[in-house]
Image: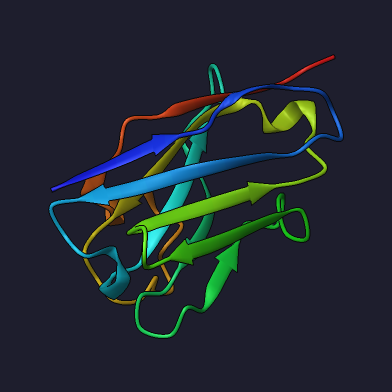
Amino acid sequence: VQLQASGGGLVQPGGSLRLSCAASGFTMDYYAIAWFRQAPGKEREAVSCINGHDRSTYYADSVKGRFTILRDRTKNTDFLQMNSLKPEDTAVYYCATDFGTGCGRDWYRVTKHDHWGQGTLVTVSS
């Protein structure tokens, strides 16, 4: 059972990037997947979450309107489409799950999720 995040890189402010979270060893379609990020010297924070049972999505206020979480069941992969990127979006991004079908009211809590992928670094800089 594994989650693999990828797609990070260097992008200019105002640019876009799409991160991927690929699942192996289980069918992602049934489960909620969350994205978190951790900037240098800061605590890990929630970014977004998608329900497994109804595809409802949730976003942190800091990314609402700019980021979109998507699921491709045929590829067993979730995506985080990030637009209008800002320097403060610079962080290592992680995907995670607790194998629940819904994000739940506490989806933003790091401790809720017990399976994490390795991170992918996003740097927003000119």
